[in-house]
Length: 84
Figure 1: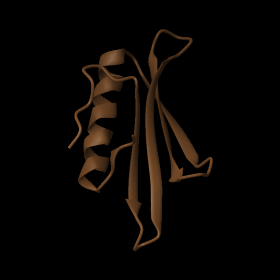
Figure 2: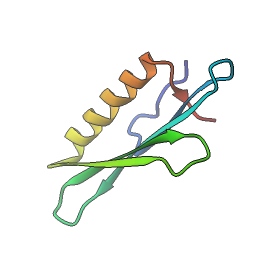
Figure 3: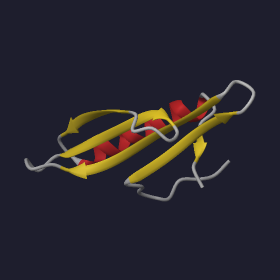
């Protein structure tokens, strides 16, 4: 199991299962917004496609980072691993 850096701003994880024809990615990025808060951008889909996205806004970087780590851990339990 790979370990995250201390304060990651960009995480890309993948779940690949050749037998089930499953090639998925999930990306989490923290970005400052124009109002002094921080946005958490989530992108997901099949590897090689543009995929889908969602943006969640937070008042500060700490809350956004907590949400990002919680999502990362949930995806890790489903078989996602850090991409090379």
